Image (cartoon, rainbow, N blue to C red; front, side, top):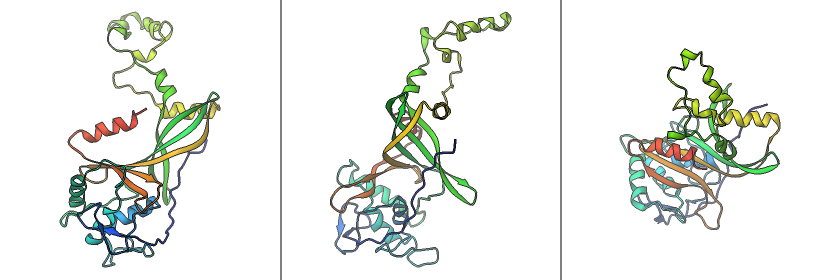
Amino acid sequence: MRKLILLVLVTILSYELAPGQGLYSPGQPKDDGRFAASTKQVNQFFRRFNAEESVEGDKRYYEGDPLYRDRELRGKFISILFDNETSSINSDTKRQFLEEVLSENYPQFIHFHRDGWFAEVSAIFTHKGKRENVTLFLKIQPEGLGYEWVIDKVVFQPFKDIFKKPEGDAKGFLHPLSHELGFMNLRKAFQDSDTPEAYTPKEYNPDYLTLFLYEMKKGSIKFETINDVKFHFFQINNWYFELNQFNRPGNNTGWLIGNLVRLQPGDKESILRYIYDQK
């Protein structure tokens, strides 16, 4: 079975831009009549965040151009890349984020081809004739002379319901002297128990992706449709943000930062566990 790959469109579009916002004042429009909040392509989000395109969106900036990654231009662009209508990101958090990202001594940028970001795709599959919600996590990897999206993890509730490892007194175990019996008591794990996973190491985690692909190859799981796509970013030091698509009237639409969190030690691991185990 061929790998399932999501292609990110690299389409350069021109936009008629609306009022922008100040360098350190996200949510406070600057009335220059040129900036628009609508960022309709994920690739444009990267270019705007890094200030790698013109205000009008009709020209790409490359290294050597005086406006390439210009600090003031970046501040105006990033200020319009927040969901200012429905998210709970407060203005002080935005200000701190902007100050660190736009630091004169250590500015930070996001990179399409680097680790530290991944896609979360909510989809519908049929499993044994029943429609099921499936969450796929995809990442970018090098392939030949270019790059590709590949499936890295999957969340599929029917599989999670199967593998519920017992704990405490409910957990079966093999006696530490089992080797003296030639491990004949493995019958407990393989014949007498309906939870053979109880006899695995503490760090054991089922490989749901392999199971998912196996069931697809057998024909018991079939793809139906995509419901939603979002992206998770950890590329900015000490920060996490979630990129969502907002389709609504007005200027504050398109691909916008819908969640922003300053990371303390251990927070990244906690957020990743939540993301991967949310269903």
